[in-house]
Length: 212
Length: 290
View 1 (tube, rainbow over the protein chains, first blue to last red):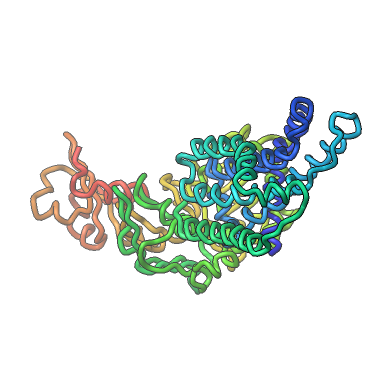
View 2 (cartoon, rainbow over the protein chains, first blue to last red):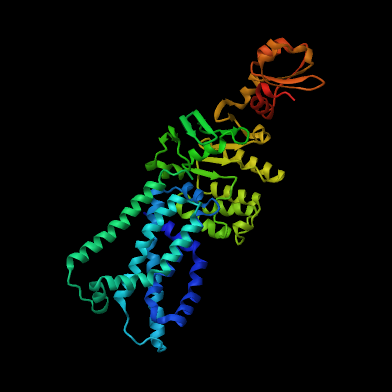
């Protein structure tokens, strides 16, 4: 299990400079569109994931990874576990942005924490589609895939709005926290977990026996 | 004397290349040189040992353990790998890269690493991408020698090295092997390196193992003949592994030294071939005429 922690640490070391870029990003976005702060918990997390995956793929770096005394399964597991700190990083930065904007009077409404939580939770879902494609395509085609996923994320905000419109229960929950249909919630959570776990299994299947 | 690597009937097919039924053992406590021309399959073979490439058929055992997924990590702890390509993160500094690698190895010895960092004059603050090819190899070597590896697997480690460090590195490897539990597998097409330090030679050509012999025994087996063309007729030509002819005469390699000496002793110059000559004539085969 320690090797997973070392791999996560490695990803943070690799993306260290990119993490610093997040400071001007949050300042700029907070200045331009502080109202839409909930979406800021998604963009940076995905950018960090794409960045760490791209670095791992460049310059024969996957060869380095498979020469480490770590089973390939652990390399995959670490990438999926990495979604948690990336999500937390984005969430914390967004919260800091909110508090700051609130203090200086740029925002006056209470924190839309349910919307924020939902947006944050979307990141592992998107990553569940991204990671198998990443392991499948390897270096070839990664740039295109990265662009497609970035576009998807940019469309995310409007998608979230239309999702709320399509599912009034969801809109109600975001606004008031009330949700009448408990079964739907359970099904939704289960589906969410199944997608992530299925994605992990698919990535394993692709990568474990792949020639590097 | 146990086998540190055992390859059993390995095959691997690509579009234009195939490794065919490779069976091979590498002995513990020795330096084994893996030679062959470009594209012979040396790197593919090493990649299979390192778990980068999977064989279509056959099995790989290392340290007596089957190199399957479940055991691969424990096996790799005992292997130091040096590649001719830079496999490290180019935008990191030497120090940062070391900091990433070290925790993965329970037997990591920081003092040893610092010793090699100093010996190789590795600048800790310099980015990997700013290092010359030789310095990158030195860094790989420093890493490989700092985690108590029992087996060093080196893919073309001397390419890109200046002659001074090249010699130093060979001396270093000779020192490393003084511990009889350590073994080295060293692929190269520069056979003069192996003339200096190798105990065993594995020769691979066109995806097949040509031989796996003690270096000393090659001299007892092969003979290089230089003589006039009048010595060659159709039957005599068949004795040669490979032959090169020019206006002055011929030069050819025979794999049965005793027979070659008996026939050519008085009529031609008989010499013990170098590894390069064995490799050259074997690769060229009977089509080595100029």
